[in-house]
Structures are given as structure tokens and as C-alpha cells.
Image (cartoon, rainbow, N blue to C red):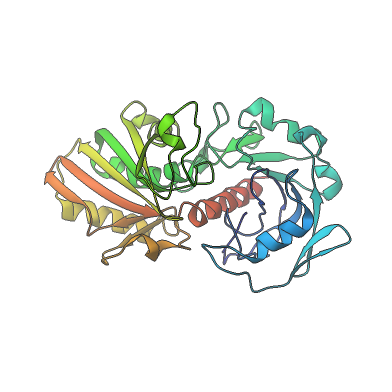
Length: 350
């Protein structure tokens, strides 16, 4: 499911459609995973999900165990999903090329199945009339963008399929950029302590590729692989080969945290690092990178729209060249807002 929370307005609103499978997804003004459907920035025109019928979409849109109940009007009418005054076409096609996006008037498609990740596979949406596709996951070959970091590299003349990277890369990259721009990063390791996700098991079950992934999500802290740190090298080329990382999946439903441990090129006290991050959070990265000195915990960030919130009180410094930095993120809500921001940025370049 997708939920959005955006305050900006746009005179010429792009028309958006969503391709989803395992979860009901929708997009209109800023976030991936549940409610808060605010029709300010986009005309939301269509949803494709072959596994969920219309009545179940209505139910899933109304109720969310993490983000709460949607207070507005949601109902089915004449085979379409109606949210407020917005009438949304619903399709149940198995193949992207079969979805009539053009019929729905869609200009942009958000590919959120987690299946059609490559340029070749995601391009199938263009056959149905879509103009551009944003993949809401890392892609093996599509240009990858993290808002606040490298969106200025987007070229509308040559890029029709793009990736918004992962929620963890969206948390890590803004922080890494600030640190590298100000002090230089020689090398770094990242650990994300990540909320469990829909791909995990509620109780022990089979997992052929990674046996530990099959253990009960509610019962365990599970070490896992992640490409999020290496992906930073794609959006900040100077850091390519300098970062890698891993994940621990933990028994919380939402909100994750990045631990970035790095060796600096230029000596800096922890106070200087905090000041650099704070300056970026209140300046060029406002709305993307947050900053807090409060004694916070994970649940304090449910519904936070930032990509990354630097926890000034949680980091430590061994010396002026070796530091551990901590940054929180709502892996659902924050990431979804960035998908919307990327769509708006792309539309502004048309």
C-alpha cells in the first residue's frame, strides 16, 4: 500500500499509475505503504494488482496496523476505487505490457512489484502507454537516484526507466554525502537495524537461498545481506568501492536505523560533524535529512517523512578520524515520500 504526506502544490499535476502485486499500492502525493491519501501533487489514475480484488483494496486502504485508519471516504463504485473525489481505474493484469496505462491517461508508472526491476522488464509498461517508469527498488541497470544527492543527474532525453534505490540507500546516501563533502570518507562500513518486512516468515519456514531468512521474524534478530551501502557508490561515484554493509532484521513493524562507521580523510571532532549535518539538514537537504538531539527511540519516527534523521546523541567518536554515526528512517513513509518527490522532479524537467 502507498501513503503520502506532502504540503507542496503544483500547477500542472502529472498523472500517475501504480503496478503492484503482493501489496495494494497507490500514489498521489508522497509515500509508499498505507494511508494519508492527499491529492495535491498528482492525478492518481490507476492501479494494477492481479492478486487483490477491488473490495479488498478498499479494506486495505482504510485500515493500516502501523499508520492507522484513513479518515476520508473510500469505496468501490462501478468497478473503480473511489478515494474522496478521485476515481481510480483498477486493473488485474499479470503482464506489464498488457496493462492499458494509456487508456487511464497515465504518464508515469511506479513499478512496485519487486519483480520487474531491469530496464528491459520495466520497459514493458511503455507498451501500454506509459511515458516513464520509476522502479521503487534497486535496479540492476536502470539509472539510480536519491533525492538530495544526485537527482540533478537525471536526463529526460535519455532516461525513461529510473530507480529510486532502496529505503536504506535513501537513508545512508544523504548522510554519507554530507560527511564526504565536508571531511572525506576513506572507507566505511554500514549496518542497518531494519524492521521486518513482508518477505519474512511469521514462524519458521523454508528459505532456500538464505536459511536464516526463513526463521520467525517476530522471534529473532536475523543477520541479512543488503546492497544498500554498495549502491551509494552508484549515486556518489567518489565513494564507489569504499562502502559495504549488512543488515539485522529485528522484530519491529516499522522504522529502521543506519549505523555508519567511517574513517575520515580530514580530522574532525564529533561536535564539528554534528554541526555539518545540522547545517545541511536546515539548508540544502531540508526535508530530506533531519537532525535531532532528543533522546529518541524507533517509534518516535513512525510517519516521519524524512529520508534520514541524524541522531546527534547516539553517535560516538574513537578519535578525530574514526566515527560511528546513527541515522533513523521510517522505511515505509519516508521512502514513499521520496518516490513522490522523484516523480515531481522528473515532471518538472519535461
